[in-house]
Length: 60
Length: 125
Image (cartoon, rainbow over all chains, first blue to last red; front, side):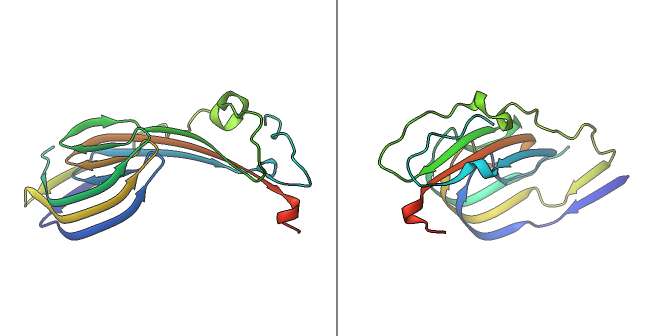
């Protein structure tokens, strides 16, 4: 596939960001390639409602 | 590949923490990696420790796309500048990057595991 991009004016008035987290990037500029990989894990054993103080979950 | 110049009149950043970067200038390649275990626990004491080695999410290989997309891209910049009047950021955390300028290659990875241990008397289900 052949793709041709013509960029004319790029003018942003103002940007307000609360937070940028976990290997995220806020880029003002050009870029060639972005590759992202993310894992997010909260299995049942990670949410425990305990009658009393229970030791931490066994390694999963 | 011709690259443009970023012109930022006003940049306000409150905090840049936990191996985060605020970079003004060009970068060829960036590879931020984040590994987090977040424990929310009710109760007066904390016992036991959480190790990355104990949990498979942190051992698993990141599944990067294997092949490059076969796209031939030609970019023509008719205006050599990128203008941002003002940017205001409260916080950048956990290996994040605030970048003014060109960033050619970025490959970012993040892994997060949450533990929530709540006491029954506070959460009658």
